Amino acid sequence: MPDTPLLTLTWTDHVTGRQGHLVVDRLVRGVCSGGLRMRPGCTLDEVAGLARGMSMKEALHHRPGARYIPLGGAKGGIDCDPRDPEAYGVLVRYLQAVRPYVESFWTTGEDLGLTQDVVDKAMAEAGLVSSVQAVYPLLEDETEARRRLAAAFALRVDGIGLDELVGGCGVAESVLTALDRAGVPYEGTRVAVQGLGTMGGATARFLARAGLKVVAVADVRGTVANPEGLDVEALLAARDAYGAVDRTALRPADRQLPGDAWLSVEADVLVPAAVSYAIDAANQERITARWIVEAANMPVLPEAEALLAARGITVLPDVVVNSGTNAWWWWTLFGDIGADAEEAFAYTRRALRDLVGAVLDRAAADGGTPRAAAHALAGERQAEIDARYGPYR
Image 1 (cartoon, helix red, strand yellow):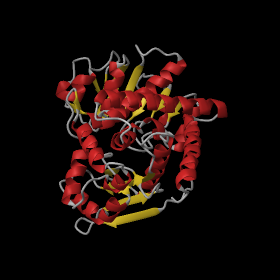
Image 2: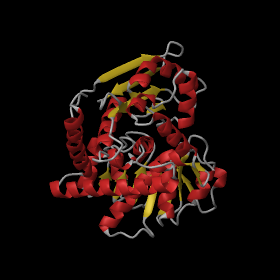
Image 3: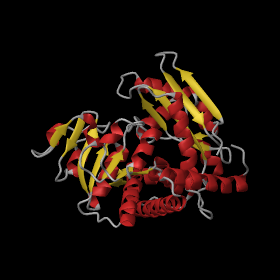
Image 4: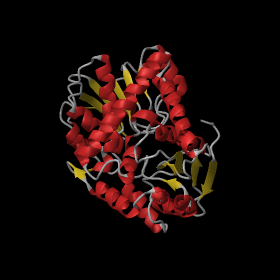
């Protein structure tokens, strides 16, 4: 895959002076896919890296014979704190500015700092039909496809929307696949999760229900830890809209620790599920876990990953393990699955188990890291897509 993106755009809000970015890494059949994030300090370089990752996530889910044909990769990002009173107005004006791209070729959705309901509301205010309307011309039956996706988004499982759960289901299945291949039992395996928002919260729930022991979770207020295991369901019920846990819900044995304590707790698996660049060359020294599973996008810096690999710590890369949400949208919209929670979970588990297995097999054969294996596999699958639809990015 070429390194130069197809399109790079920076927008400056005329009201607040804040900036937003859009990067289209490549197009497939004239369309690309990638979420929109909002966080203070979001940069163009960050968005470009995320867009390239989306190209790989899409390509990795190429399966000949499926109705869903992977799209190109893209990403949007706004440099603003989503808690800022001006944030929603900034979001609407950004969408008004990039409206021609959303209408023509950029399909998007929630990402860090934004929920899908907020994105949908802002899209409507900006005069857009849908955050994924650019893909509609590729559908065999647009009316039925839109009905199916709307029905899927309306589903709730234990009080939580299906769209908020499928990504974490995929991350959890990635963890379980790694444990199975290593012959490690689920019971007693300790997990620490950074971030208890949509992705981190769902991952913690699925792992706890599989029998793993969630011993630490971190949010913007710090780390909560208990070596005997946290009550994940109680913590999820005590979250606010941004994934911060009300500390009054903690049990007497639950300890409150500094925000970065999740790195060094005694755990077998670390799941960074919040911000990018969370693990660097300095703080990686504190990690003793055997696996790091990237539920967030780009949480482990390259220099840190090299040092971790040298210490025998395996990083399962974001382009594989957190790809479930994006893929679920398209599996549903294109008709590979219906608006059914159990079917969605089963399909996600099977797809991620197959993909993680293929990546680990490739890494073992090549003698490299799972990330290098995933990138190689993505390149091969992208070449298959290009051979069918043309190389234009």
